[in-house]
Length: 471
Image (cartoon, rainbow, N blue to C red; front, side, top):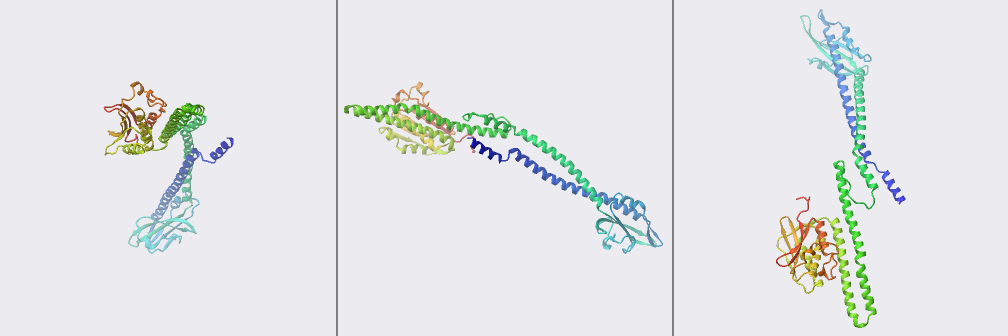
């Protein structure tokens, strides 16, 4: 046992807990969300930095354009200090500018700050483009100043550029801020998720402790408190334990019944056999006759005990299926067991043309009807009729004999295990109608017994649709 427990402990140790699985899923979702937020933050920061510094470029280029005057037919640019003051906020960036005439000739500034002439002539708004300043990526803007004077007419193009160091630093700063906030929020969410998940799994821990502390033979239902998901699992476990309890109970009954009920007939058979050996030859036929009767009684008892165990077993393991009760009645009649039990009795079949469908197990139904027929043959009066009927949402199979049936005070006890009436005279094991009641209980039916115009009838009534079954 210790080795088995150690092996199970090692197996469980190699498995991931539900908490680790859920936390792994939460962390994965948060990681993916963090990556998305970081990318979005970087894109937002880059866009914000671009818009901010583009406005500075436009302001600087506009100041230079406003400072241009036409002197003796030549545009002259008096570069104001304020134009570069705006760009001085990015103290690590390099700046380049140029002022060009209508034909693209450089009037002042740097040669590398140059807009394409075909694009420049079509400009009506500031135009941004990317280029390089001394091999370093930069951002440029071109602004057009139009002149229409007597001694000069045309466009003057002002281009101002700046490297991207401050832009990238601003974008990274915004991204780091967003990452810090996201990280703190993610940490708070992880801690909250951990405590919430632990709290949600407390019913599972409590149920585990209750199962471990239970006696191995305690199959009573567990309390179904806690969340709906846990309650559903507890209900399913309770249904399983009920089935297991019925199986264990059936085995216990079979063992105890076998030990209790077989002791007397086996002792009687042994006594009759010993007397037959010791007695004289004149009494030998009488002894053998009693021995045969005892043997038949023992065989009947064993058959019914095994039939009852079979019915209980199939009730928990064989799922209900649509069964036509007419087929059951016909099968029982064709098996011809009644010819062995009561060769002189007349057995008739009375079924209609319409199917009588119920939800049950055909083998269990056959065992129940066989016991109903055997009970009628042993205690009833010939003729015996097997029939089926249907009313509303229930189907019924019945066995009727021509007798008056037992008195009312006996009807209340018939159907209990090993309950024999005085009319049985020791020929009954007392399990026949008990098997019928077990089948009825297993499939949501009922057993009815009573007198009719033609005699005494035992009816097994079953629903045509099991409760909760799809329509």
